[in-house]
Length: 244
Image (cartoon, rainbow, N blue to C red; front, side):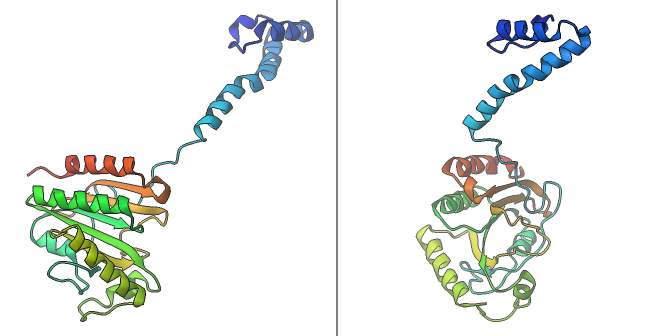
């Protein structure tokens, strides 16, 4: 058998001799087939070791919310800061009426990484005159989006004590971080109808233009909420904002 056509395995001479002894009486095509059967496990070992060293396959990109080219739709979260604080108000509608582009963030986490993103979004709204920031915390449990939307237009109504506590927490965050241009608000854990937010997504960031068309979308799982990933998103946000 001509083993020079086979990939090197580190023990080629010894294995080639062994295969020659066993396969010398077979036709050339049959001998090659048997040779591959012997060598296949040895060829796979380096790949398996490399995969094991790297921790296996990386997680595939997560799809959450309207994708590029699709449109965002109105929803009415409980606002925690700004002129309409305490009301369930559509900030998408507000920015659409002002012909503003938008950065819309949906988060199921509240930690330092999310705080960094909020600060960055606020900075961008100050830099770009026609840009609005909407940060929606999907933390209210016990009710669905449909039930929350039914409260729109009513005076301040908290779904439960947990939502009331979260309202106070976000008001304090807005004051501490001096968030004036961006809306911090609360919504039910399932997210607004029409957005199709992935249950896996701890964070979904959408850039939409004044016509509500999505120009960029990125989503992260909880395990992916690292300082490096947030920094990368922040760098990409300004590039995604439509030019005026």
